[in-house]
Length: 116
Image (tube, rainbow, N blue to C red):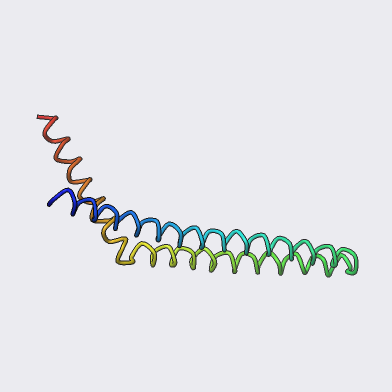
């Protein structure tokens, strides 16, 4: 492989990596925004509940809120994990995986050579 082809392959790989990284950053920023929004809404609801509700209602609200957060948290992290897997499985990431596999094989070979 010529240096020119290797350089073009590297440039293409780097561009695809940056594209994937930007997709990840967008997903992460969305998660941060959603977290901030949930916290803000929670603060609003709690303030209203404390001002206008009885102890029994506050207790019931607290239990329901904890259950809702638990249920939504599980699905949110599952969705994030699924989205992460989709990003990794995109065609551009195949080259990154192949490069990583190649480097692992190289490291194994290098280790075997020096351990003799």
